[in-house]
Image (cartoon, rainbow, N blue to C red):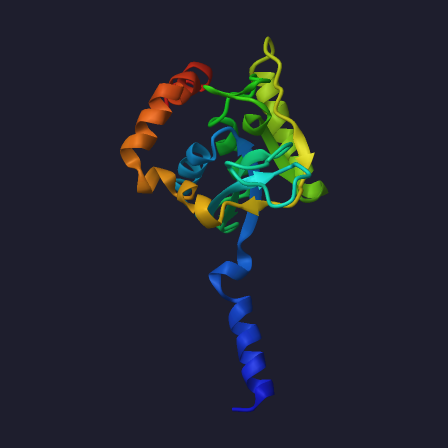
Length: 193
């Protein structure tokens, strides 16, 4: 097989692979362990990576400098199964959109909620879903911002244990999630799942 034919076969197969049609969303909703689990359970999501975004520090780390960064997740999903709007609707019901100090028991700038949009189409969808939350709760102030996408820094190196934490440490994760009051507060806001 010639190099040109092999290259053409590779390009065609890549174009039709399941990953060729994947889309990404970057969202911050407090503890990335919890956001990761909440989205990995959603049909049509193919990958969720924990990391940091939104700040100016280069190569932020969990135990080091992540000044200005949000704990966030990068969600890869199949747009034939889920839309960006579906992703955002799932996001809203898994955060406290009224907490300007952080999320649940985690307080501070790195635990704030936010939607990071990559383009104007995503911004329009994000604004639409945010407005739906505003209208549903007219007596509350929705503080979750819609921000321009920034570099996403996945957890790596010695801190890779934070990726898939809920799978690797199910008892510690369950104790943390319960102790943090996440599900109790979500039920209070959104009703039982």
